[in-house]
Structures are given as C-alpha cells and as structure tokens.
Amino acid sequence: MFPAASLLTTLLLALSIAASPVEVRNSPVTLPIARRLNTSGGTINLVQHDQSRAAALKNFKGDSTLSRRTGSITVTNDGVSYIAAVGVGSPATTYHLIVDTGSSNTWVGAGTAYVKTSTSVDTGEPVTVDYGSGSFSGTEYTDTVTLGSGLTITAQSIGVASTSTGFTGVDGIVGIGPLDLTEGTLTDEPNTTIPTVTDNLYSQGVISEIVVGISFEPTTTDSDANGELTFGGTDATKYTGTLAYTPLTTTYPASYYWGINESITYGSKTILAETAGIVDTGTTLILLASNAYDAYVSATGATLDRTTGLLRITSTQYSALQNLNFNVGSNTYALTPNGQIWPRSLNTYIGGTATSIYLVVSDLGTPSGEGLDFINGYTFLERFYSVFDTTNSQVGFATTAYTDATTN
Ligand SMILES: *[C@@H]1O[C@H](CO)[C@@H](O)[C@H](O)[C@H]1NC(C)=O
Ligand SMILES: *[C@@H]1O[C@H](CO)[C@@H](O)[C@H](O)[C@H]1NC(C)=O
Ligand SMILES: *[C@@H]1O[C@H](CO)[C@@H](O)[C@H](O)[C@H]1NC(C)=O
Image (cartoon, rainbow, N blue to C red; front, side):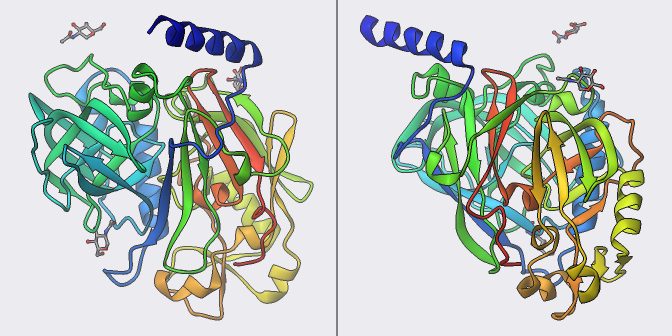
C-alpha cells in the first residue's frame, strides 16, 4: 500500500512540474467510441440541435439553483453522437452512452432499462439535468461501472432515468465535463457535486491525473467505430507533432465548461478577435458568434440553404476556399477547405442534395462579447486530437493524420 502511494505521489510531483499529462500506450484505460448518425427519423436538423444546445450552455448561471437549468429551449433531434459501450452493475449490463464533454452527469435508462444487481445502491436522491437538446429526470444510484475491457470503477454515482426526452436510440450519457457542472443536479442537495467517472478513476488510483484524451476521425459513413477516449493521459499513436496546451479561460460562462480563449481568421482576415468559447463533443458543427459568422459568410460567398439550415457553396467557391485558422496561444490550428465541408456522401442524411457542398460552420445565434463566442464541435475535433486536463486546468490540441484529410 505505502510503496504504491509514494510512487503515485512521486509521479504526481513529477507531473506537476512538467505540467504535461502522461503518455498512455496500450493502456487498459482507453475506450473505443463509435460515431453514429441517427437516421431513424428521416432528416437530421444539425443546426437546430446545435443552436438549442448552445443556448442552454450560455444560459447556465452557476448559482446552485435549479432554475438555471430550465430555459425555454426546444428539444430537437440529436443527429450525430459519439457512443461508448459502458457496463453498469455486476454482472454488467452494457449501455450505449453519448460521450459528452459539455456535461458531467453519467446516467442510464433512456433506452435499455437499468438492471439492478447486488452492486446497485439506491441513494434516494432525485436528479435532473436539462441539456437544451434533451433532458432526463430520475434517481441517483451508486454502482460498479466498467469502461472498455475490464476497467472498473466501484460506487460510481449514476443517474437512473425515469423520464427522458431527446435520447431515443441511446441509453444516456457519460459526462466528462468539469465537476462543477454536476452542482444543482441533485434536486434535494443543490450544493453537492457528483464525482465524474474521470474523478473516480483518479480517486480509486487507476489513473494518476484527471485527464481525458480524445481522438475522433472524419468519417463518410453513417456509423463508424473510429474514436477513442483515453483516461489518465494521451495516446501518442493518435496524433502527429506536439501537443500544445492553453489554460482554461477565466471568462464566464465559457469558464463553466472546457472553455478557452482563441481568435479565428479566415485566410489572413480576422473574423473573430481573441475571445472565450468552448470545446464541446456534444456539438456537431463549429458555431461562431453572429458577427464572426457574418464575416465568414461574406468572405466565402456562401448562401444559407433553407432545407438543411447550413451554408452552401458552389464548386467554384469551394476551389477558392481558404483555411479557417483557430489561433490558440501561439499555435494555429488550420481547418482546411475539406475540413470546413460536411461529408458529401452524407448530404442526403441531413436533407441536402447529393451534389451540393455544405459548410460545417454555423451561427451561434448571439453576437460576440457574451463570454461564450464560439463552439469548437466534432467537426473541429475530428481534425485535431484534444486533451481535457483538469489536473493542470488546461486544454491541449495536436494535429493528426486526418488534419489535412480530403475525405469529405
Ligand atoms: C433519432 O431520431 C428520432 C426521430 O427523429 C428521435 O426521436 C430520436 O430521439 C433520435 N435519437 C437520438 C439518439 O437522438
Ligand atoms: C447552498 O450554498 C448557498 C451559498 O453558499 C447557501 O446559501 C445555501 O444555504 C446552501 N444550501 C444548502 C441546501 O446547503
Ligand atoms: C482570456 O481572455 C480574457 C478576456 O480578454 C482575459 O481576461 C483572460 O486573462 C484571458 N486568459 C485566460 C486564461 O482566461
């Protein structure tokens, strides 16, 4: 016990000096995640979903009252999700959970009903979370949670839904956002936070830092197991070049999430001066404050397509498209023209025509200067490896083998 504890302490000291997460290779703490496009209900309205979510995120008041979670937000279809298979109970039942960096409660029961086993403990605490694009209410349990092949967390606090909206086709969420986002979700204990799976992996000694590395890859099919979560560190096989970190922003309300400061240029033209926003796996598109979006529209010559809600460009405009640069600290992450378009093979899933070219940059719906002026969603994260580092209060990015892919 003692040697292990002192080893951990030594490791932690070393890490806090380096302030750079451990590299995890062939680790049991990696979890494959599959991208799934929900085609069950016909056309997916990506823009409506993402804007509803953005409005809910911006609405967060962080004042430990439940009212902050009940904005007048439309529930829309969650079209694109990254799903992890997570076991709960002993023996475990497998649930398919959306991986969400923008929320922090883990819960099951939207689809597959919760199966109680000898490890299930009913805390009797009512729990409720509103996501903008959906919600759930139920009771908090503690139970054994299994991630990947055999990595177990004991007494993980999880929500068991009695009602939920917007989650047909999945069983719930594994929330890997900041701990504070769980505050206020236990109705009777508004000041209590609920340790996330990452927090518990750390406190139970499985990982030595509260860090999650995420790899997504672009895909042109409606379902593809091409993502990976690494708990406790990063996976060097999933990125190229060096990981660079930026401190979490102090600007509210981005500071409640994985918030960072960045500026955005289209070619050499600044369309968004340095400001705060968030990195979010629960958002499909790249959302820009309305003034930055308008500048992007005029720079690209794109027109709004009413059917999909996305911007559309001609093939001539596509040929002339310049990089969209995300400037973070002294680093620039260039989203290539191909990275700025929706995969053409998936056009019809979003109600588009097969031969059109749609852009993945969309309107946040509010002007800049409100403390959450951009969302770097999946379409950004599919081109750059990302690291969500609670221990060192930072977010990291690196280029990948797919940064310059032309698969779209
Ligand atoms: C999939 O689409 C159907 C129909 O639009 C919707 O009811 C359901 O909630 C969606 N599933 C997910 C996971 O969003
Ligand atoms: C929660 O915290 C607030 C502010 O610190 C305090 O006023 C309130 O009494 C607390 N509520 C409970 C139920 O502990
Ligand atoms: C981010 O930008 C805000 C507003 O300009 C500034 O106050 C803050 O120091 C910047 N850096 C961080 C890490 O928040």
